[in-house]
Amino acid sequence: MKYLISVLFLLGLSISANAEFKVGFVYVGPVTDHGWTYQHDEGRKAVEAAGIKATYVESVQYGADSERVIRQLAQSGHDLIFTTSFGYMDPTNNVAKDFPNVKFEHATGYKMDHPNVSVYSARFYQGRTLLGHIAGKMTKTNTIGYIASFPIPEVIRGINAMTLAAQKVNPDIKTKIIWVFSWYDPGKEAEAAQALIDQGADIIMQHTDSTAAVQVAEKAGVWSFGQASDMQKFAPKSILTSIIDDWAPYYVERSIAARDGTWSQQNTWHGLKEGMVAMAPYNPAMGSDLVKEVEQLQKDLASGKANSFTGPIYDQKGNLLVAEGSVADDGLLGGMKVYVKGVEGDVPQ
Image (cartoon, rainbow, N blue to C red; front, side, top):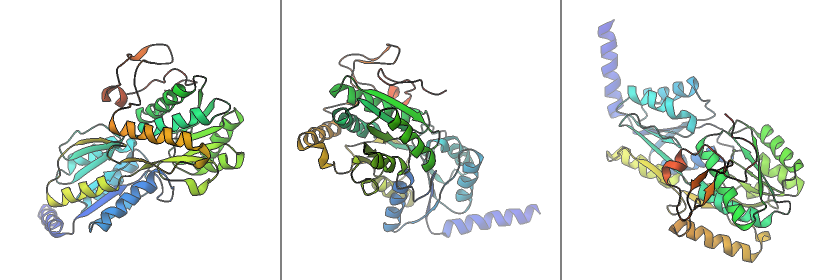
């Protein structure tokens, strides 16, 4: 039996060595969400267009299920695996330990426990700064409704960036949040949008992945913003713009590097400057003056002339987070767990 296992193991190595280079993707939602997962899959298609075979598994739950899927991809001859949600961080590192010859890339996390693991994310908060500026100028009720997924630093950072930008142009702004504890649940997202509208919000934004919220906003006659991809066609009157996550160039670059043997471990955090964060066209209903303002702010954020977290910044309890004249460093941003002043409610524990 031991001899048979050894033969099969060696045979497996031989097959793997001669097999076509393959890239695998693990998605938290369906490829049809028209948001987060949709954009990652657009990146996968770009990898295929570059001549590299790429497969995916969609709607993979956190925990044991995700580790099982990641392990199956590694066992089935995938040479590079992208795990595209924060909750896959520990499962990715667990599997990477057992497959040192496979490369792993984890999105939005921070753990690189093994030399074959890299992490990558986008500075989505820069886009939310632009949304906040627009919202502060467009609201009539001074109430912004925010549908949030999970209380991780990425989401809290976005809420804070938006609120700070809105407060700069409208000191009377209030940010109301409903946590749905899901990345993709159209029913919950729709209910949250309606609840926020009922509480006086005339601007709806989200850090969730379906188009349900913008469609509710369209029906109610309030403004909204798309998330992760250009959602304008789903709510043409309501949507003022959308943050677009453009993963394609990164996925192509890293896949080619892994195939050609030049891949190395790295921590990537790109934004407007590099194009990983982009903005959909601005709705003319904003007015030409506001469009020009936001376009200039977008250029300034990309160049570094402006920063989303410039002090003084205080948390809800009045504690100084960033001193006047300073900007938040990546350590503070990466571990952000508190709301800034002006956000209502408490961060869920």
